[in-house]
Length: 392
Image 1 (cartoon, rainbow, N blue to C red):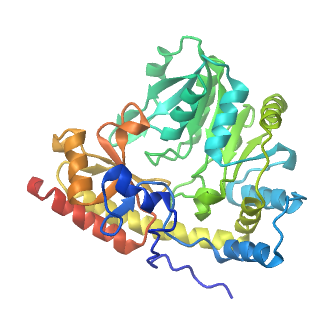
Image 2 (image 1 turned 90 degrees about the vertical axis):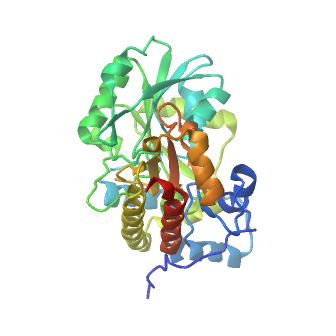
Image 3 (image 1 turned 120 degrees about the horizontal axis):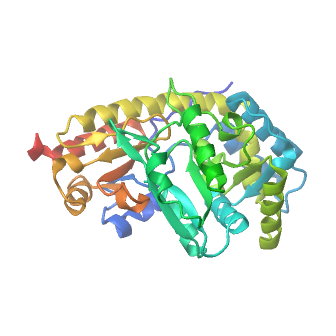
């Protein structure tokens, strides 16, 4: 019998080599024994029991050699994408990378040359810009429009930025940090924009399973059946197994697939057995039931956080359609980023991602990770209310 997951369980991750908890003192000046880690995008929850059982099976076997025979692994991916996303995937389309930051880096190498531009719709996940610049390419920032408190694409404004140097566009779908679930019309408009400017379209959909009730994510490959698109997906965010560093780049188009395969071969990349075993176990009916319970729990965390934060004058939490990452605008306080960050870190003792790291448009924001036991979310809200009490 499968037991319901206990997302309220407080798991002490301090001293466990957790980047989220063990690095917050050095980076934010927040002591993990009295602070709340709400920055790194992993969850403070145990993964599904089926994932832990897969690791226990490997441990009992006792020999940790090279992984062979990907049939069950590929079948699990195919089943999940068809069952959860209405997307039919052929096994030969699947490449396994060391996570999707690695997948992004390989796309940059495979589809662009040094000096080329890569388009990002900012503010957006900060690792994109990091790997683009590290590869000797340039970041072309196309700021999203903030309309009635949510992000919208602004193709008319972006047209003026296209000078022919850009060769690739990375779409973050659902959007991190804004939590938008892009509509089919928005996805089609993105494909048309990419086609007009000769851009390879790469869609990072690592958060595609973490969608709030009432919302519906559409994979770019489903919305754009006639458009060559590089799809990036993973089990790691969905099931809280980011330490497995395992991601999938799925490419139906033969020409793009050949270019990506050539770069994978040149870099000598192959997956680790633990990541494949965990992914195979997670993409299952048991994993699906756990995910449904998770999304319901995250939705309640979202409601509690938003109600508390939006009650503080000058603060506004963007409506969250997907992900577990709240994007809070502090511009209404009239404070500089240094001033509101000092209150959040120094007074509330919360470590949250600084908005400026996500690119243009993020300067007045902080990103808060809500994938933690509800008691911590409630405590975070109370701390923020006290830290900004003079505004009330």
